[in-house]
Amino acid sequence: MIVNVWYSVNGERLGTYMGHTGAVWCVDADWDTKHVLTGSADNSCRLWDCETGKQLALLKTNSAVRTCGFDFGGNIIMFSTDKQMGYQCFVSFFDLRDPSQIDNNEPYMKIPCNDSKITSAVWGPLGECIIAGHESGELNQYSAKSGEVLVNVKEHSRQINDIQLSRDMTMFVTASKDNTAKLFDSTTLEHQKTFRTERPVNSAALSPNYDHVVLGGGQEAMDVTTTSTRIGKFEARFFHLAFEEEFGRVKGHFGPINSVAFHPDGKSYSSGGEDGYVRIHYFDPQYFEFEFEA
Image (cartoon, rainbow, N blue to C red):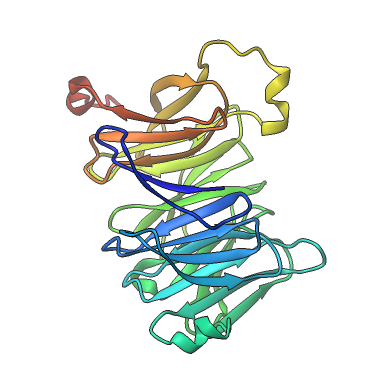
């Protein structure tokens, strides 16, 4: 319901962004953390002043906002809405430099997704396109200028839960319900690597300075109560990017992991779980000295 901002270094809460009345599915900050964008099940996408927590814009939608994001320069936002209550899934694009688009709730472009709804989406390199993952396991690259589908691939057999870009935006990793995470080229959507697990993968992130991928997942939320609540048995799993081999696990969560992210300096990572906790893990010296033996 409430979006919070925290100091990652000591876990102190800095403030909140008050306004949403439903689950918040997505949040993004622009490159200089001036603005924050949030999308919610209360059928709205909201723009906030990052520093003060003031709501700057409210964009009403017909269904839940599932994904949202700022482009590279922070001037253009995109968000996708769910297919529900008789409304189809759309991706909307607004230019924040044109106040009339916000005031009239009129995006400069709106792309319908008739076949399978978007479950995750990110901006591609240089803000020329967005990369969207669908409920069907398909990936589409949509032009941010014309809205046309530039590339379509289907490497996953089930829903794509998360997409995260590499630091230089040349690659991205997808996390899917089909128990795998996969690495793709951002421009061509060429499939490069696959990381296999035994459970649905809810989130995957790429290290900014090592060839490492972290995966978080677990069972479906509705199956959680049917398993033993053994001490924090939900693990984040580390794979080598090139060799596709798992080289480590970190226990801790009491429920499935919903999201994972590396710190921009690559020295720590955070995971958010169904158990209601965000855990921040600092890597020990062995991690930095670790050499993968192929």
